[in-house]
Image (cartoon, rainbow over all chains, first blue to last red; front, side, top):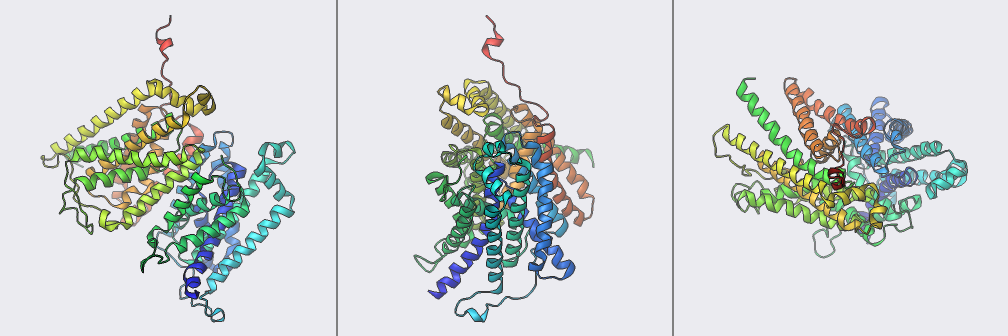
Length: 296
Length: 321
């Protein structure tokens, strides 16, 4: 049992936290700006590499570099929205989706141009499990990832429920026309959506880097699970995205449990296939997601 | 460069550009005519490429880690089965997503493309894994240089022309009219009694079949096939740029865009070849950046492309009564 928790549940929750952070952004952008943002994975990569630059320049630990990286990624996302997405506000939503693919390629190319393609760790060295949690194998990085996720999700909860802009965001996500009639400023809500999305994306990217290694394709590879998590939870439902992320993370890790024989049930090479399978099942069975999100 | 080398280079350019034109025409049926957002070109490309390669490669030669090896069947058979299998995959994807809004099709097609790339990478016994399949037969390769190259180029040109005629016929037919109606106003098309989902599925499946054919042609032309060939940048986004620059909705535009963008793409290699290696690697990223930039800028500045769409004349207009 303890081995089971160590090998499958803990990695699943860690992975799920990262998925959740990405999925919230995708889900909110979808419900407020009305398009599937395919550059979201690469926004995560960008955040991770900005933090890397700070770590290298100042010798800080990655968590300390996080605030600067979040600010940098927010600035980048606002600039991207201004120059790449805003001109399409009046056209068919699918045209913005094409533009978001273009942006994804541009971000990734810029990262490879600046930092190269070699996988890099934030900090060299091994990361032994902490003794105080025996017999559970919990490493310091696992705690960092879960704590950062909980802090950010709590902050998001407070923003959405206690502030005026948060309420405006929810209103616009529920019914954009009704929100506009009541005098909510569309562009201001959109800008805040990018702030939230970029902060969470950059954090997810940095946490992925802490968990494994920095790679230019790390965000692109996370894109499919993130969309699957957002759809699983229900598009436009931030809490659904958290649920979807955690459920997907745990299922993905459990998929390599040796259920029938000594071999993993599903080869680890196909972990991402689980995300796709769940996505397909949801599209057929319940496209509105677990928490009754939006279907467009 | 001496004249012979230049001619060979031009023939390679036309051959590969022609293969891209077949795929761009397929995408034009998906996106330009019907408004289906297919970003899984790489997936259908991979299905076609691996199918044809596995069917036609001689059993002994294919081995480079692959246990199954090829079946050594004739090449034309591969070129027929490859698009059929790509169409079958598209049918399954289409059945699931086409009733939902286009964003879902985008997510699902990109998903299937990634899964198929994983299959190509992981199923060593079948696909040779990261090493891929070698010694795929190329048509006319027994002929002397440059006649083999010329014959292949002519064959590809013929295929492009046939695809173009097929697509033009589709566009001018009542079927093409329904497609445009669905693209421009789905509700109205449905109200006229058209089965929107069935028509969309047809367009999606047929378009994807041509992407599969493009994959098969590429595998035989390059003679080696690795999972890298179905990297989304080359197999998906380059085709998108070609169609958008050429003019989506216009079949001539799709062909023009394919040849033009491929010319620019390869011409830059002549320049980078002269530079030190380290620069060459960096230029590859600059090119990737430019593909992304083109997607964003062309859509903003001239969304109609070089050759804008022209609706075909209606029968009533041609012969007024």
